[in-house]
Amino acid sequence: MQKTNTPSDALLTEALAPTLETLLGFAKQAGAQSCDAVATHGRSLSVAVREGELEDVDNSEGRDVGLRVIIDGRQACVSSSDMSEASLKMLAERAVAMAKLAPKDPYCGLPDKALLSSLESRPDLELFDPTLRSPEALKEKALEVEAATLAVNGVSQAEGASANWASSAIYFATSDGFGAGWKSSRHGLSVTAIAERNGEMERDYDYDGTRWLSDLRTPDEIGRHAGERSVARLGSRQISSGTYPVIFEERLSGSLVSAFLGAINGNAIARGVSFLKDKMGEEAFGKHIQIIDDPHMVRGQGSRPWDGEGLAARKQQLVKDGILQTWLLNSAAGRQLGLASTGHATRGIGAPPGISATNSFLAPGTHTLDALIKDMNEGLLITEMFGPSLNSNTGDYSVGVAGVKIENGERAYPVSEVTIAGNLNDVFKTFIPANDIRFDGATNAPSLLAEGMTVAGSS
Image (tube, rainbow, N blue to C red; front, side):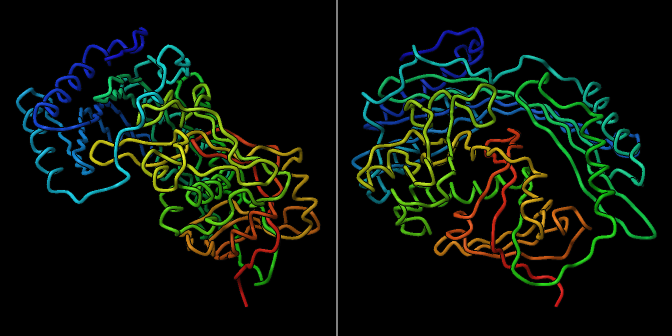
């Protein structure tokens, strides 16, 4: 079995890889024709404070292993947190017994061995920060971010502040000889602020999450931003119903990219339940829109050196000049559609490979947010969304929102208790991106102006 030997993978090679070699061996002995397995080892620590006092500490660690076996076009998946040799043997025998009783699936199976990723070309993605965090250090940062938000004039209290850290190791192996893994980490800091004036209360939040501690925004910046956002919402009211242009703020606009990614998921396309199922090679967005998926973004939240089946992950343009270029496919969905996998398989512990994007983003434009607001003249800047509803077959979309009314190209007053609606087939084609993209998750976009949304407010 081919293995990586980089220093950062020492824990993987020493602890997880032999477990999978043993498990795959038991599966073959029990009668599996082909099989793959995944093992994970994760640690996390979270500290929450309230009113200057420690509120909660959550410290967890766990190891899990999952196995998929394939026999005569039938497959079964099993998982366990017990990695003893006796448990692994029973796990393999149970998986084989289940597979023999499973219905046939003409699309299941391991990918072609020739397509497996070459480990020699593995990129250095800097996904693992070796910095360890103690409960005391996390408590200190949580108290700092709470103090920063309470220092904002108009903020009456912090609903909660937390700091967290997590690290994980994953190893994946197949009966075809592929075996590799990686380690990753994440540092996070968040706070929710409550502002109060004349008996009215409003809340808002801010957060940051990064692979490396050194990239995390400061507690002062996060706390102050949360406080200022909550104060800015005081005096909110409804607006009249009508048809308006709207701007989705950059920290919300990634959800629209997520809706797009769901619509090009190969499983949805194969089932015929996507509003974009007939759009391949056609204009799905305006001609100035580019959407990219980049698994090799250094320190990216969705980065990975290969996909959940061991296939090479590569940067791809999902939308080029507004034209839809590709579906997101794993091997099974590719076989069903008569296409090759695009390297977007994901692998959980107890289920067959799924499909997901990596670091997907809608490329920024040239306008500042203020310039978009000025060009919009009158409309709605959306700063919070809740309860979204999307009909995956038709693209009909609605969501409750709060934000800021725009009048004469300027921010006029805060708005709440409003619902917006539209069809994403139409909405996508009106997008005008700002230049304010911030990569704070796996799916990102700059602020987006959309024309002609139906706004339901006061009558």
